[in-house]
Structures are given as structure tokens and as C-alpha cells.
View 1 (cartoon, rainbow, N blue to C red):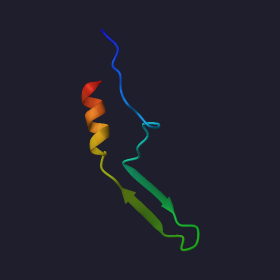
View 2 (cartoon, rainbow, N blue to C red):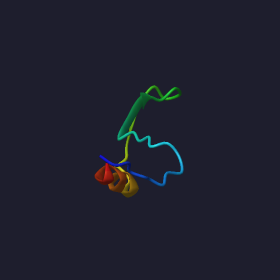
View 3 (cartoon, one colour):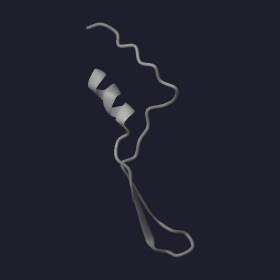
Length: 46
């Protein structure tokens, strides 16, 4: 298997979902973010 050369400008980190208790309101907050397109493209190459 040959090497795959990728042009990356940083780390490949992504959280699909973040959930925590807000320190002031004590309410649970939840954020979701889909995988960015350039992540998908790199994953296809791998």
C-alpha cells in the first residue's frame, strides 16, 4: 500500500455532539455539528 499525501493545515479533530451543564443556569446544553465536507473527503481517501 502506498503513502497518501494529504494537505492539512491543522489537526483532524471533530466532535459530533457536545453536552454539558451550563455553570450559571445549571441547565443541560447540547450542541451538534455534522462532519465537515473536507473531513468526509479526506476519510474517503483513507
